[in-house]
Image 1 (cartoon, rainbow, N blue to C red):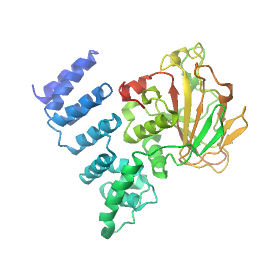
Image 2: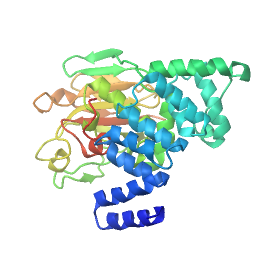
Image 3: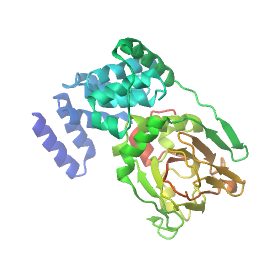
Image 4: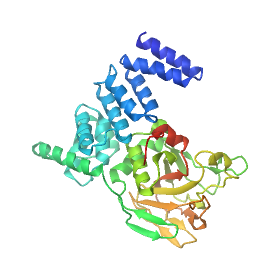
Length: 376
């Protein structure tokens, strides 16, 4: 069979609800050289066996395509197959040189925005994709004469960042606890997340205790963009991995990242993130209890917008790139009463942040993105 016949057969199988058969047809189309089919099958298998996905992409008819090589690296890195940091760094830069703009955007997420390495890669993006560069407000001041040294500096800085170890900047409360981690995201990463996902924003909802489904309520007046598996990329996975390392939880136990925007006057009144097994029965089925919350501020707010813990008399002012982590339940899944918190309204500017809730068990999102192979 040719590629077109394989794709048609895959569509027929998918329409009839037979996902496994559809993927086998896509596998065959990928082997024959169809890039999209090859990547669809590789990601489908990556949750179960990333080694198999990497090996598959090595053998397809489009294996030499730089886009295929980029996604092979992504699957390999987050599947702990391609773990050597220098190899990952050199491969990303090589793919960027071949015109894969995503490789350069990923590289920027690991670099200090003040470094010459960042300016060097930003210049590459400006040349390859001026529209993307403009949206992300990238500039470059590296001269041609320094390009060779900047390339090596980029490899070194990127290699080091890939194995970064995180320690809390401060612990605001030891009983819950509430930990603060500064400079988790760079200004570039904050702009990237806002720019890429703000088009997905919808009015935020709360759980209706009667139906177990979401509803719009005055208790929560922000806008939210749920970054579903179909929207995930290297940089969202990088944040997932960072949160996993900081919270000492498994990546597959996390819910999808949520991008939030609070316009002036909008707020999230005092509430618990932890779930009630009876009132929140529908949500509770997907991973059981929410054991931890991670909040990452994407901009600095001059007035208002604090995260409040009324029972602990704690106020945290949003600062760009800072992460706040706290527990919602004890080791037995019982709600921690001091986790009661709120998002205060801002006075004159939008407040942007990303939130992630971590469950007791594997979530649908975690299973789709990370499967069962990952350890953290």
